[in-house]
Length: 200
Image (cartoon, rainbow, N blue to C red; front, side, top):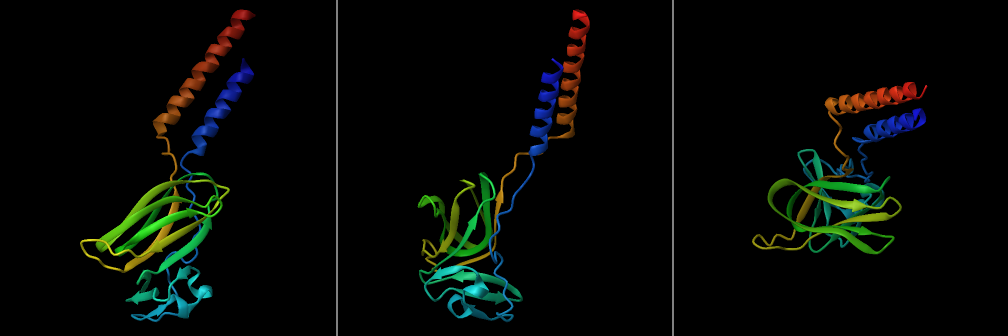
């Protein structure tokens, strides 16, 4: 009886202690800040090269633009840009990024050759786009951004900044939850002690 109470208590404590942890996926140059691009200027991905941008691209018109010292990526003219990454653990994740313009975002599993998630992006003014999806820890992924002119604006540009993928953690228990759990464990302990005494 004593061993089963100890193992039950340990399992409950581990379960309560595990929730609330969040994992941030590492995406290279997720904020597109480059010293090679001067304030209030721009340069194309092609001119800047992979070693600076650290994003792949298809097409030569996409660029890094600087507005007052804040830099961002602008995907134009049917171009596509992408970044590869791997998740540290399986679970549900949230993708967020600041955006303006029309286009799409797609998450692709390189190992299974399947699309995990995709969405159209359409914004008249700067806003934060957010979507959720599930990842498998053992797979490698690619995050794509591309342009698609959509009504009513038919804008063929998609500007993005501050790309982040974060694991969605279970909510952290309130102190009252811990108190209830400890109270329940105490009651189990008392019951076990009484049973031992009644047997003696």
